[in-house]
Image (cartoon, rainbow over all chains, first blue to last red; front, side, top):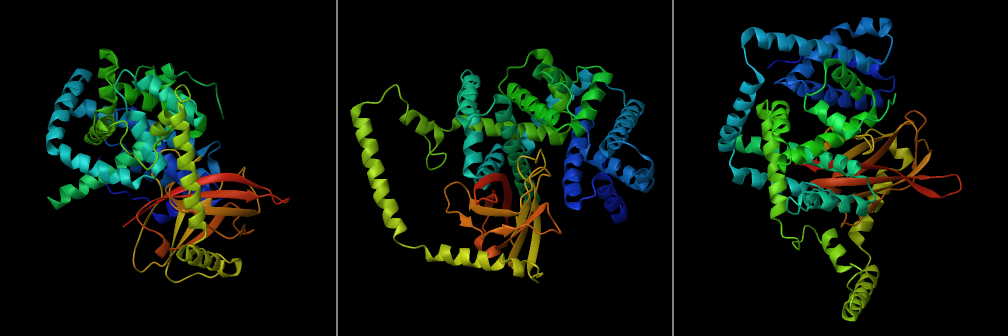
Length: 199
Length: 278
């Protein structure tokens, strides 16, 4: 869904005020909520989670003035309701315009991975990876490299050892690695995009 | 609003799209308002991606995984990048210097089960040389570092903090304990900006009136100390720190905030990270 966001500044301000009276905290909640809503679209196999998230916030922005007076409960659950409706609308559109089944999607995904591989050279990705690893602090860099080090068989026990050494549960270690990986992925994506523009 | 903790297996079923609509809606809606569940989902997702990359998924789960995480170009690109990270890490020799003193080397060196006398002697000699070197460094005051800390003290003087500086940019930073998946706050260096004002956002539960802060780039660099910070009544949940941009260079910075209690004791409160680019 390629679209321009139409959330106006007043709507944005009202959404912040609705989320929390403290503007700084509201801004933090807003950013978190955008990520959470985008993940809901991802979990529901929607092809443009970011575009659909914009649509959710635009729809809420149009109603927020009245909602602040009438809606009881956590505002984030209202956003969830709008996202859920949009998931259903999108599913209906897909069924109307194209008939496909899961097997078709898997085959396309598999084939597409190979096409994508050709579009982006391995060297470019490795170059960007090295640049982006240098942007992490040394603790983050060491953690992610150690987490993925070792051959396949030794990995699980190796990770348990890392977690124990850091005094963490394995789940908390995974969350830390998740965040570092996401930071790294975003950096690499930006780097690859810059390379594509230069071509 | 914390419900019962869910098992990783049930969350994995959810992430693979193998739960009914009612359960899906329960998990999705709770993930927006329950930080504990959000963390559990992140951990389960990391575990799932690891299993995919390391080819530990069953054929059925692999198909479901591709349906969920391979549907769009953006998602496939993320998977390719994750695979590259894994392959790069695997290709690093174990003894390669990931940084100056990687944990893995330290662990092997200090392993208790094999410690012959020559090794203990070598450690003592290295420790002695290190002590001599540190002593010699201490006796040569780092004037540049002191100048920077003086500038920090001047910029963060409570009377000057009320002034709005003309060549100043601001950046809001959330503590890493509250940050979930949003990107790390980023500041782009620009010649016209001379001062960066950091707004350290605080958890509601952490309220103190006096703080100390230390700014550091990476673990190996020398930290910069800020003068004692008094929290203003106007913005009790925001701590403002001003940093001259001449002190910053590209990379990730860490700020450790410590609270000063009424009896003068100091306790660590929060850690903040931000990235400088440009």
